[in-house]
Image (cartoon, one colour):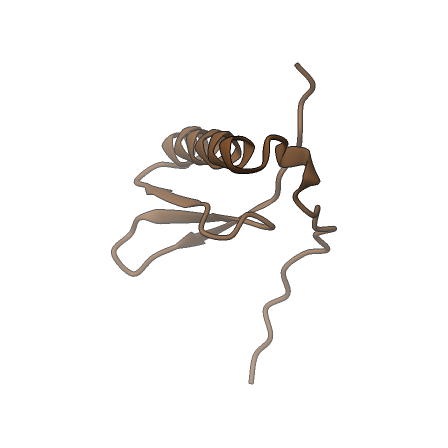
Length: 76
């Protein structure tokens, strides 16, 4: 099975939990108290997302890939 890479935006919520949002997979996100647990849960969320996409379309690779450039903090 070939590996597919995804980019995730990681943030720390006001309650102290770490949050992840997977770029290019709408609604694919997770949360956890530790970074290691967040990565584990995010991988699970991605796999579930892809499983559902595959069931709906027959092929998740048809989903448009996003060329993620980065995050920039802008102060106003």
